[in-house]
Image (cartoon, rainbow, N blue to C red):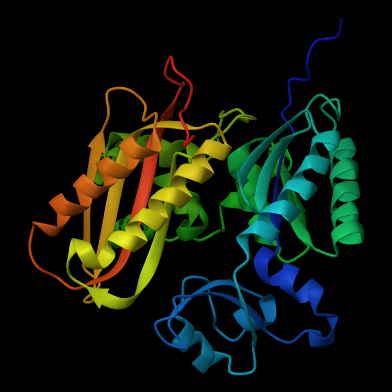
Length: 364
């Protein structure tokens, strides 16, 4: 029996502007016109946020998370579509199910991205892995009319950054001896794990590129950013990442948030929408067979201040009635803090764990 290859061949596959591309595919008459997928709140015609923007819209400055009214000002000629998670999830499942036949292990990172380990299937050969992935990329275009960008390297960290390097429909290979050459010139914001706060702290020290992080040394990074962050950046700036792929990866939390049609202030006003969220979250987690021990509620005021309350259970929640009662109690507790006008509300669950001894109970 041959030993497994010592060289890891890890790919990251990222669907390009996924939601917008799905909508674009359904409307060939739109050509290369800008396409924007929005989450409309219903409060007004322009109330809500952009969920996905086609690349032609991005060139005009539109980005996911941008308020719809702002996007309309930047891109007045765009075609607008309401987000359709059910359709996108179905297509995502179809695409990434096919990926399993090209790889040893697949980890679904989100609805539009996945990692694939091809170490054994490609026998440690980068050329063989590249051939398989190009075949998959062509398959996605042929069968679904969609494009994806692919990064191939020695670990998840570098593969993810490689797939981001050329979009859309990019294909970037970073061999083991090319990792430093690939990473060094990139700005620090390109390194996974460097958010705005860390970026600003590093820039204050004159750190502008990943090479600058690597040259800083471990002791300085720990002194500036703390042990955990310092150690991570020391390794990441060198392209070091030993994390394995997790084929059973689960989301750490599940949540639903809605914007109220009118600002509210009392439990009576928000109760119907809260109960809708409870029904939705319960059914969605039940469908996946998930059991949770942590619950939380969220309220965002008309001034966009955020309020939240949470609770941990000693045993997993087993009935919808229990779940509904706990969420109601948390909202009542939250509303006791101080009076404010509520614009948005949310419910979240986390702490997914093994099921309790009894099976999950549903309405009879």
